[in-house]
Image (cartoon, rainbow, N blue to C red):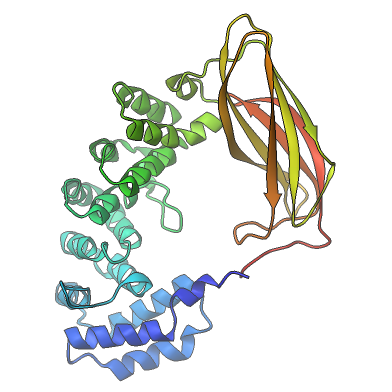
Length: 373
């Protein structure tokens, strides 16, 4: 069974934080801090644990953020000297997100120093929400920073729909202000940064599909293999949905004479177990056709309804008048992000985003199965 995420922050994290702050600010009331944190920590989940530590810091550090910020900064690793890293810095994010709102530039500078040691994306978003124009002006200056963690924060921190973090409703409505940042980082030397750019564009595509399809089209000419991968990854939601312009960006045209026959090895799948199926694609047209084969599993929900999730398959060219058979296996196993319910499920075959075949099957499990907390 997977280790609960809440254990990423524990009593030792609180003690390490207390020691680091005491070194940076010798008058820090370490005993008072630990007394406020340790008795309640174990009963809380991950984000609550970080917030408990952040609240305890707020009660003991100087109430003026301009005075507290240098103390927090001094807790970070400095050259050869060690300091706080990793999940211990979640509470710093949470502290900055609340108490740095009236000092946006100072708070952003602190997050820039923090992010090489732990992501600053949790703390940056309330600052963008509070003063978007000022925050984006500062963040735009990070695109040429020598540290790739800082460059990534420029793209990841501004994502309109960043998982685990607050949404940025103004950027959901109008993402135009962050497009120059994404354009500047599209050929970044680090894959870590380029993946973040792709994920941000994919976020935008959920609300502005035509905008992203146009962005991809404008950046495709002369694209390196790395940029081409980024653009396709950025288009993944649009490609799964069969967005015509997005498909055309990668050479996929509307289907003409393509058919799919679907067969399952068995109609009942054990849990844990796997669904094995084969798809026969045929092209009746007199010209070759480039196709993208995906599939959707329609998962049974608690209320008995079915909800689809699309999985990437493969891309290939179908010669005129010919066909090909493709086999796939889809595993059903305990994971922390999904509860499986027994009963009828669905399998749907998507070709260039168009549904061409479907079948039902039964997932056999006596009770809902979940791994993790």
